[in-house]
Length: 247
Length: 352
Image (cartoon, rainbow over the protein chains, first blue to last red):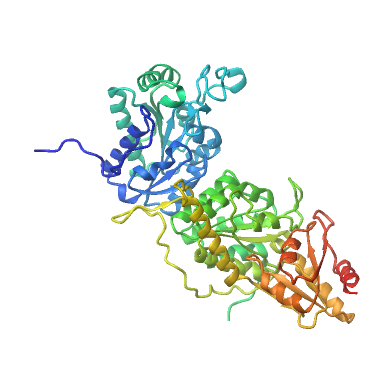
């Protein structure tokens, strides 16, 4: 009998610690599939960030270096410059990349570092307990915006994929989601495209991955999944915002 | 014979880093250390290395962290306010057992302060600086030759003990020109870097991290780091002794202050006063045994610093129980550098 579907070799055979309904596990799998497809597992160095994604090394069977909160793009810059033949990616949440780490992501992108950034946006600080993030939607209640995010006071949610697409150094920037099979198949395509940019040495590639956080949103997994498709996609449109080279 | 050169301390340091095999430099401009990134930006590309002028000190220390994790020799440099920004990354490097050389050509503070020579970053350098209770190796050059020699040593010690090491200079040793002999790197047995991330290949996964959440894991990790600090104290303390044998008063100072103190000690000898100098070269590990030995016979110590009193605490902890420790210092700023005559007056006062 022919095997048509199997676990990616870049993923370890372990259960994840992520909450029920969280999309991290799905994104882990898509990233691992892309690694398998390009055959880069053995020369990959992942950069783990602070937050729920720090346990990267528990799930991916690759070498990993851990970065301080927000600094993953700078750490990855050091890794890639010292080992240009390595395949390098960071995996960061919104509190990490769009708040404390905005300087690092903008400048690594602007330098056109030959790396891939997977940015998981769930509009909240997940591991820290559901506080307001730069991507928290207007009106969204969190443990530090108990009356809902107020645009006049807190500013509007930042659209990172569009913002980074403005920079000359960025080769590819896209926003994806995995809330339904159609979006999931597209997310798979875009992640592979982002990886191809690096595999072919074409520069900085960025994937913003819309994710659910049922625990901190106070929703069951199904409701949380629905919110990604409705509220989140309405403010954070899916699509490709920069595609510099024809791959 | 190796040619003698006449150059700035900052340039000698950069030249030594390259001789030590450093090919990766990440930094951000700040006076009075900008000669270092300028030198590296000019020389590293010729050697196939990489120079990055980072967007901030925070980014540059994390670039150093990333490069170091792959096993290469790498360096960053800055001056006092910039070093404060690097403390987060230094703590992470200490926690993840990453080598790497960090240069602090100190200026006066606190805050923006000024660009004058200062030793007010002593506490920050030797007591951890960042969060979490750790130490790094701290070397204090007092001449351009030492800027060269100690920088090469800093790379070897960092690799040998798997921890960051710091050159703690100041604007005097950084900016002055002296003759220097650019020695070749001495042979030293260093352990293989079998911990670096390089892509797992056909081997086992490697992870460079400082997060330990299992019961007892972090405590065990910390005890391991602290055992290494003990080993450093036992094996790597370095100091200079000058006219100590018959001294009735031990003068102690490090870096630039020791240069001025040495002039004052020689002037005191000319007046017939039995005074000697004990100059710590490693500030961490602090040369505790040298202070104990010196003060078992001679019971008076005068500590001189370009600050309001920092190293003096370590001196007090290291001397014989019944030794008296006096302090003379000037918090830094324009016009605050003590003269040899000023220090001679202090020596004369405490000698009696």
